[in-house]
Length: 194
Image (cartoon, rainbow, N blue to C red; front, side):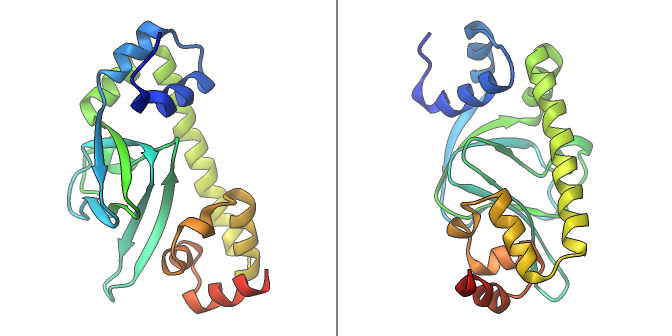
């Protein structure tokens, strides 16, 4: 069955993770709507409760916080072919305490919280993918936290290049540095040596 081309990446994502038939795919796709965003558009504010999950067709999502001194700290980035959202807030329905932003013009497939969890309940493949996303997300977060604790700035940059090779090409030095926990000037200096 031919689906609308805006679902090509989502179809690939789902089929790579489970043997899912065309009828179920059609049903899943009905729950998404496409939106286009501008560069640096805020999708979720700090004090809002997250009500949507986003599949990225094109572009990049950033999850970040801002401390009392106004300094941004990037927690995560999501690129094409993946889901991204303020997941803790989506799950517990409490204020996010972080922002969700598109850092470049993006095309997103949006699903509401209610529809997202309904699909997880109704479709075993969606349940499996959700569990996998939670587990892998947890593992990645733990690796990043514990790996970064013992690393110097150069090692952090090399770790990032190994785990996300295109990251530094797509994300500004300021945002990348805030993700790595180093200063933008340190990151610039390291990049010239690599």
